[in-house]
Length: 239
Image (cartoon, rainbow, N blue to C red; front, side, top):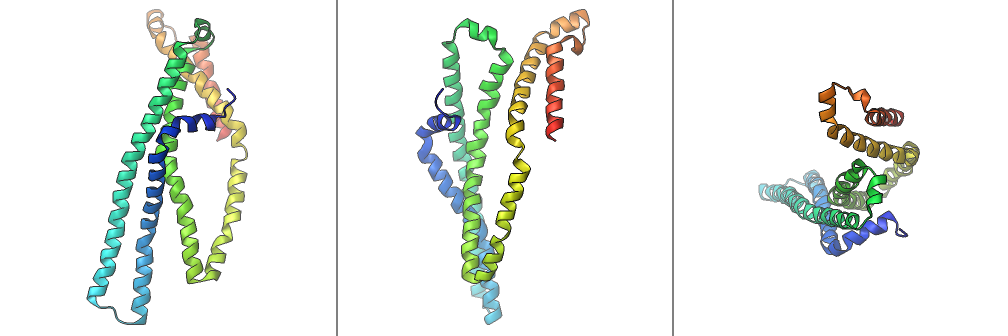
C-alpha cells in the first residue's frame, strides 16, 4: 500500500527492462530514419543549386532515401512485434498477481465489492498497461529524439532559424497546461463512473432471465440505470 502506482507498475516491468530499453532505442533510431529522407533531399537540392548533379550521384541520393524509408518500416514492424510481446507479458503478470491475491481474500471482501468492479480491475484496467508500454513508450522515444535532433540540425544550418523554432515551445506548453488543468479533477469521477457502470452491466446481464420472464424494463434495475445516467453526466460535463 505504501508503494505508488508508478512504482508498483515499474516493479512488474522490471524483469523486462532490457527488452524495453532496446525497444526505446530502436524507436529513437526509427524516428531518425523518418527524418533522414528530408535531410537527404535538402543535401540533394543544395548540391543541385551549386553545380549539375550526375545521374549516378542522383541515383545514390534516391537509394539513400529508399534505404531510410525501408529501414524505418522494418524497424517499426520489429519494434511493434517485440514491444507487444513484452507488454502482454506484463499484463499477464499483473492479472496473475491479481487473481492470486483475490484467491487469498476473505469472502467478506467479495460481499462488499461487486463483481463488475473486480472485472473492470482485472480485465479492463490491466489491459490499459498494454497501451502504456506498447504504444506510449515508442511514441515517447520518438517525441524526445525528433525535436532535439531537428533543433541540432537547424542550429547547424542557421542558428536564427533554430531560435525562431524554439519560440512556440513555451506557448505550446502553456496552452497544453491550460487545456489539461481540469483533467486531474475529472479523471477520478470518470473512472468511478466507469466502475459503477461495469458493475451495473454485470448485474443487468445476470438478471436478463428475470427481465424476459416478468417483462420488466431496464428502469427496474435502478443501479444499472443510475450508473448509465451517471456516466453520461460525467462525460457530458467533461466534454
